[in-house]
Length: 175
Ligand SMILES: CC(C)(COP(=O)(O)OP(=O)(O)OC[C@H]1O[C@@H](n2cnc3c(N)ncnc32)[C@H](O)[C@@H]1OP(=O)(O)O)[C@@H](O)C(=O)NCCC(=O)NCCS
Image 1 (tube, rainbow, N blue to C red):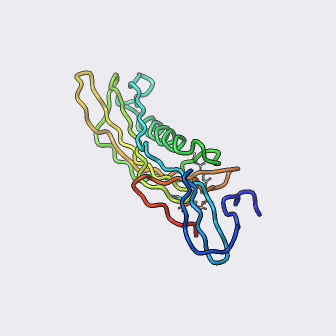
Image 2: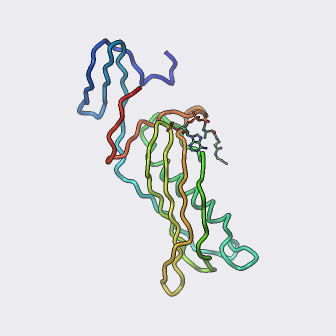
């Protein structure tokens, strides 16, 4: 068997699903038994922040949008990395970033707070919502932008199942 398919392990012929105490699910089919270890994700939020310095400004004197996008990607990458601890994956790469609308500008000295929330887990995909706020020097808080990222878990440079699920989702049987 291909080494990357170690989690599909033929054992014997039966028809039932069994959950072991260590979190291992065994799905029995008529001809094949497929086994995988599933990891439940409970901590869904990751935060990140920085203060706007002069080098972060565009020539109009407000926070450069590209800087915000980079920090959003970084925050989402932190969230994706954390859920992959203890899995066979090498890491996760950014596959896509959905629409970003910049709603208000940030200025020199503002604190920028980013919050990433894992919203959906596929077989190898990890959907992450990132919300960005600014806090000015009077303590007033406002939204700058938000966006949904999709990361893909990889091993040896190729998509590889992360075997994680959100606690509020029911794990799906192996196909
Ligand atoms: C992302 C990447 C690993 C996907 O590889 P692939 O062979 O096309 O992946 P597949 O078609 O097998 O899909 C794998 C998963 O990724 C998801 N996916 C792939 N491309 C996607 C996209 N553009 N948007 C959302 N999800 C995507 C699929 O839905 C699938 O999810 P699932 O396993 O949960 O069902 C590959 O395109 C890649 O390496 N891209 C470059 C990533 C990178 O360098 N990022 C940094 C940019 S500087």
